[in-house]
Length: 327
Image (cartoon, rainbow, N blue to C red; front, side, top):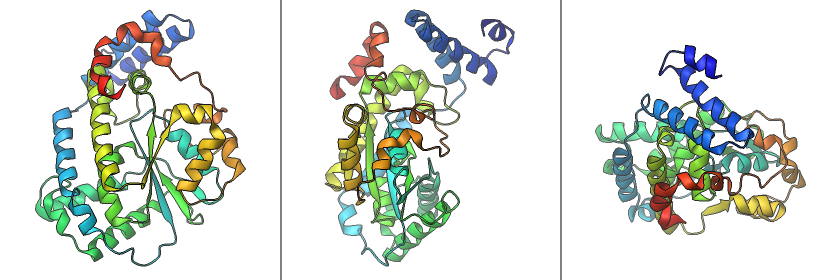
């Protein structure tokens, strides 16, 4: 790999991928200092190729939280006609266990796992621009009628048919960035179920830093930006939790690893589903998985990933300072 890297064009996609690969090889040999050196170089190279503005993200969230703040209850429309299907939205910071949660639910006879769907973000962006040409979440979105919200929900469900057979009464959408749009989702799909995937903040950030994502997740290639992103996520989720008490179930990866059946029962109860023991054998499900956790969900639950950040504890001083409010 080092020979190939030396021959690769600096800054190219192949060179960046080759910079991540030796880090994993070092980890397998127990050389965590060597691995971290590789990760630092790889992430620095990747960060130079992506656009990410944490201030812009926070501003967008501020607008959405303001629009869907006190007005959320006032804007809530009647449930409308019964829909034949109920979406289950699994959100959270990437690498927090959302793929595991989806895999568990997808083993239930009444649930179809659909992965990360782009349609909430697409509809929110389009609706904001149609309202006043401004940013998604602008104040004029709040003026949409009940019929407008109903039509948006129906359009989302129509788009989702591309990814589901249509035979199951429930399906999952685990796009992580949907956490910023829960108010929008609540208005267009009042029947929706929300699950918030959580994991130790240090484990979460280190796992992101160790991962070269296929696309998106541009906050992942700078460790300090990652820490700030995690705190921003917590801020937004606190807001939705206050506005929608009891509607969002927080599931901690560590709890699932230590008490699988208890957490499965808790998940299914929140989703209004009867217990299905197949959910305990999630690793036997051969459905297609297109996330960074594809290999892990093919195996029984394990606790090796719990506390993995400790291998790099000496490198994480600044990150720990940033994450102090969440630790």
